[in-house]
Amino acid sequence: MSTSLWLKYWIQRTKDSEGGQPPPLKIFLSVYAALTFAYVLTYVVVMWLGLTVARIRAAERIHFQLLDKVLRLPMAFFDTTPLGRIINRFSSDMFSVDIRIANKTMDILLFGISVLSTLLVIIFTTPSFIVLVPFLLLGYWAAQACFLSASRTLARIYSVSKSPVYQHFNESLAGVSTIRAMQVHEQFIRMSENKADLMTNNFLSNMSSRRWLDVQLRLLSSTVLFSAALLAVLGRKNLDPSMAGLTLSFAMSITEEVATLVRNFCDLQVIFHFLFHLNGTQSEHSRSSHSQSLAQQTIEPIG
Image 1 (cartoon, rainbow, N blue to C red):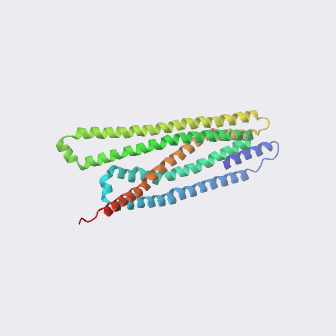
Image 2: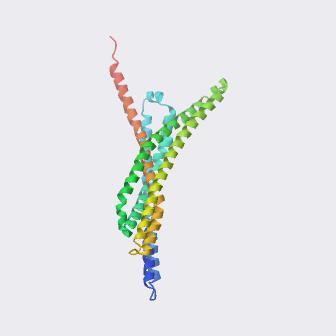
Image 3: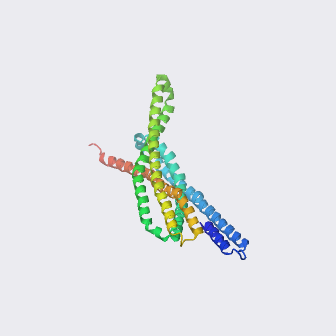
């Protein structure tokens, strides 16, 4: 954003100095290089702190806490809980916590700053655009709320459907000799295919909801572009051409940026649901310990 504004100022100064002495080139190039270096340095520092330091520290702490809780659970928990569900917690759910939370958070920060800067440039160029901002925010909020209500359920269904696949595969490997001896391998193959098909169907349903969200967001972003272009045309007599061109270029890029921002925000809400699943292990442990203590209290010696 800063480099684009500096280029706009550079072009305006060069245009105003026609017929006279042009502005010194070294100053403009030095400022442009300084802005670029500051952006790269800030980006590297933020990404290093967010993706290297914070992500590794949080992932290590959550993983050790989950492992400690699972190892301290009573044997009754492992007798009643499918093994595939436990594997799912340590595989896909931990992947969401380790990798996706940090990436989504950084994307929300970067794209949020970019979208906010674009809206400020459009409002500064055409102040009448501020009238449309509340309606656009309402539309984005409605699309996000409608998507979250369905996406959480679909993501939970997809996550649950992966546990039977892991469990069936592990049980098949453990009893492969018995399966071959009884000659029921064809039956186990069909069972595995059915479970994999169910998981795939749930995955496609989850992806279909994302495509629906993309369509709604692109329609709203197209409204932003159309409004910015219309206001620039209506106010062409009092509007700087270079500023109008810069505004339209930013408005064209806001389509993908807003779609990515809202999609990452919704994904982050869904990932927090997986984090709640990991913390739910402690609740299960507490309920198991409480049930065990109640059972011990109810057992009284006979006689």
